[in-house]
Amino acid sequence: MGIRSKQDLWSGIMFLGVGVFFAWVATGYQMGTAARMGPGYFPFWLGVVLALLGIVITLGALSPKAEETEIDKFDWRIVGLVVGSVVLYGVLLEPLGVYLSTFILVVVSSLAGHDFNWKVAVANGIFLVVFSYLAFVKGLGLIFPLWPSLSF
Image (cartoon, rainbow, N blue to C red; front, top):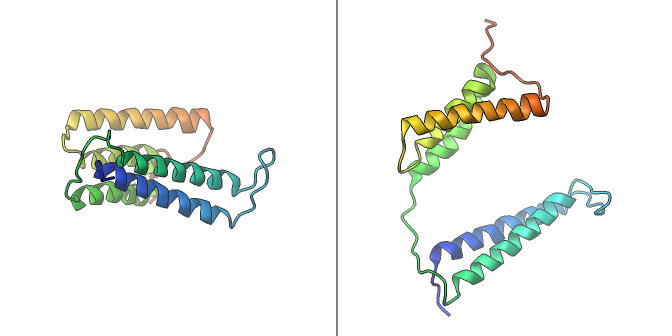
């Protein structure tokens, strides 16, 4: 039984590892029951389901029917842009507010794509700002700084 899909194999191993890790960490919290869930209940079962999904994907990679794939060279530029945009969001959130920080997050992380387009990135940024407003401010009633603070 050979490895036909290296992408699926490593994805499955990653899911399995992350799932086992989260399930293991969640055992340190009170579990509770399905009717009265404790803080560890949901993360534990989510980790178990993720680990099972990882096993299924890993076994699928070994199937003779699996599509043969290879793994591309690791691109540190993409990782840096995605992780950097999240860090930048955290740094800019307080001084610029949610709207501008979210817009900058979307545009900077869009630079990681192989087919980057300014119009699409700006449209996605505007959409996510509107969605954030509707979901978090109107829907959930959360209160946080939306625009830059003008106090000097």
